[in-house]
Amino acid sequence: MDGFEYLPLVLVAVGIILIATAVVIVPQGREYTLETFGRYSRTLKPGLSFIIPVFQRISKKMDMRERVIDIPSQGVITKDNVMVTADAVVFIQVIDARMATYEVSNLENAIQNLCLTNVRTVVGSMDLDEVLSKRDAINAKLLEVIDQATDTWGTKVTRIEIKDLSPPADITQAMNKQMKAEREKRSDILIAEGHKQSQILKAEGEKEAAIREAEGRKTAAFLDAEAREREAEAEAKATDMVSQAIAKGDVNAVNYFVAQEYVKAFESLAKSPNQKTVIVPAELSNLAATVGGIGALLDAGGKANKK
Figure 1 (cartoon, rainbow, N blue to C red):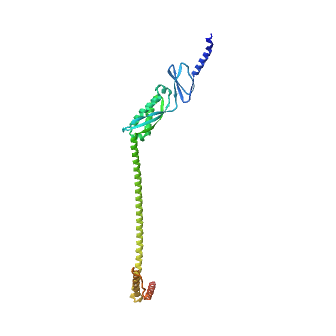
Figure 2 (figure 1 turned 90 degrees about the horizontal axis):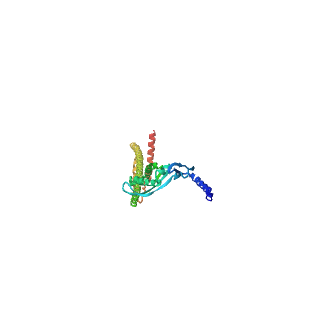
Figure 3 (figure 1 turned 90 degrees about the vertical axis):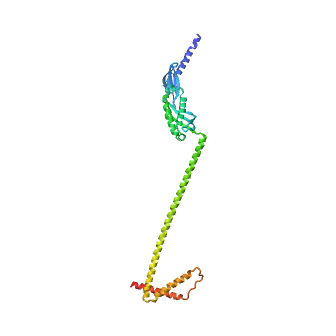
């Protein structure tokens, strides 16, 4: 009788345990796979669910959020036989909890090994220059291959990124030297182009200046020639007038020629570099008279022309 006193308490405790195990609360962002007698039955979505204790159990609590898997570093030989160190990260999201649970035993490990082998395949099919310059192309190709392979696992590969591609130290030094030489080459080319343009502009400036100077000399020569021509015409006209006056017996015409030669001789004497003292002849008054006669002669010629 004493043993049956605790039976109600035991039954109540068992009932509470059964009720607690029958109620399942699935958090947001997760899904649970449910098995009945060891066989997949259904997938529990986020929220409140009920199961049959003892007969049913939760087999896998699957995280449905996007997560990151780090791909370890590995040495990869490129197409031109250069060893590079490559590591990556892959972003995955489980789409089907049932397939991710039952189609692969260890999802993250499987994806990690799949990425390692495909990184070796893709990088190994390219030259070193392509590997270093076409990282986006490598990422796109890896994403296409790995995402297709994980479809049967109920998993979507959203992104894959190559974190680092490191060639050996000696290759890095050689690349740095090559880059430095290329930059110096471009600098020398720019300096040479600048010098060339400077010389071209200088030559064009000198050419323009020479053309303008030649045009100036041409204009000056033309004006000088025109002035000499007018002077010659005036001299010829004066000579013709004096000759006509001489023919008429005018003494002033003879005095004009004498005065002209007199003035020229006196001008040469005054301009002589060895001449320090100029002696003015006593006949200066005669010179004035002669000039006066010339003026009378020119007035007479002018009146004759008016008539």
